[in-house]
Image 1: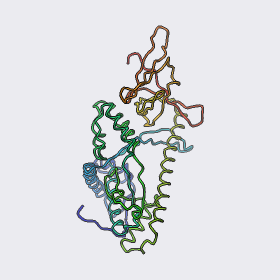
Image 2: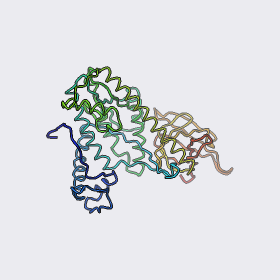
Image 3: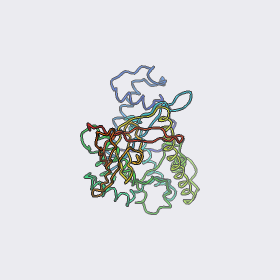
Image 4: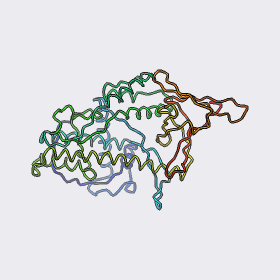
Length: 389
């Protein structure tokens, strides 16, 4: 970045592209798009100009993203479930794993740049009143437990920084088709020690080292880019405007700004929880309407009478209880810190012997998701392993 400029502007949009439109331009750079394939375009600009602009931004974003991870950023992408809804009833009629594509990454890179630039500007102008966003390092106890577990199961993970953690996670875990599934399980494990990012007022935290954003690995960050949906961004816009002399200085005391920050943090936590519960609710309805559903799953946690799985087809996590399975018995033990559960299946007929099945982290299993008697609840049951396996 050679130079930067802050000021009040009016943006005259020449076209309203969706992520899908931008993605199709990125995937087919040589394609000539017809007007019917895109939303209405301003007469001042041609479709070819717009396509070239998207491709230029994509190329720059690729360089920015590469450099960001070289500089030590961390990204933990957990599977996110999306639904197609019946237009009349509003009920889910299908679901799929949301794909995070190049068009999403393009927008993200420039959004991050804007947020970081504004964070520096408002902190320079108002060192006691700036509303920034910090991300504390992982919780020490949970991180230590995870480090010990990874050592025991032979996973070579470098936990020394956000950047080394990202690098470890993105090195291939095997070359088979389940390497991506193992990465998803590890991503979930690594997410557990992570703390929530928080809004704060710089005048309340005296030590600048506490301002850092752990995952982005930058000293100053804020939320500026979404004022139509986040109140924190409105406060930041007012601070930025005041820093340019375009409006009167902020008269709020630092304690009042911190109270606003605390309220924003509470609302952010609540909205995250509602989003998670909403996805659970819609998926439970989907299982009730379209189930039972079968899928491969990978074990992500083992307890003494149950184990947790990541259902690969749908990206949901479920706990499977031993007492819900037709077992003669089960045995739990720890090999070092590695938990292991041996299930003894009842024979399907008298001529067969009891069939043992060993469950450890990364074990691949077949599960069936079925609707419960309780409203809007569903269970995961383990399918009996076949004799051939």
